[in-house]
Length: 220
Image (cartoon, rainbow, N blue to C red; front, side):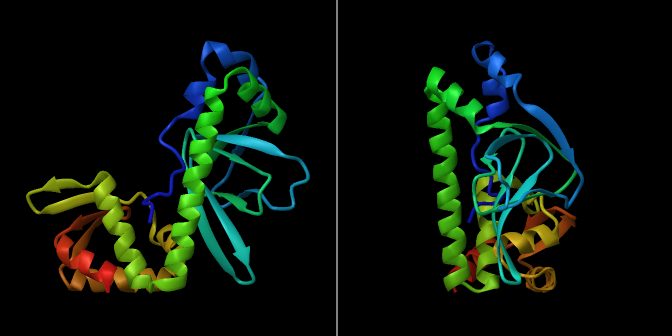
């Protein structure tokens, strides 16, 4: 399971700011949104693309009374409004918006941008399949353990006391990603702490004290 569910490590804002694309980049409009404000819904009539300039955006689906997080977009990521997904700011967020035709012109002139888009869409599909598999076949404890293990693999730092890892998510955001509730995630993290598997350093960081035990939980 992706740790922050970022779609790509390529910063598209830097790519589009290049001299070859500067004329197209001028067609993007800047918009700012407050924390928890819904940016786009599946009912949008226009087809836009948007880039994350600052902040973070949650991409999620709604089914009856449940929400399923597909991705957390970060600065440099790109997404389209032409989907069945909702997009919500997780913090004060600035995006750059343009009509989808702008992207088509960019791809026509510089085909390499299309390769980036394929990479983005491929990662989104992989994330979606991972989420569906986790929700269908794994309990919340396993999904949480798997998420933390992936975070350790991606950005864990070995210290004298254990492995320090910055999750970068609040308990509520973490619950949304693994398809659980804040109360359940809090209870599970407390169980992990009592079992000397990990301890919280701050709101968004953990010290992993027993990685093998955590890996065992992810497979049970």
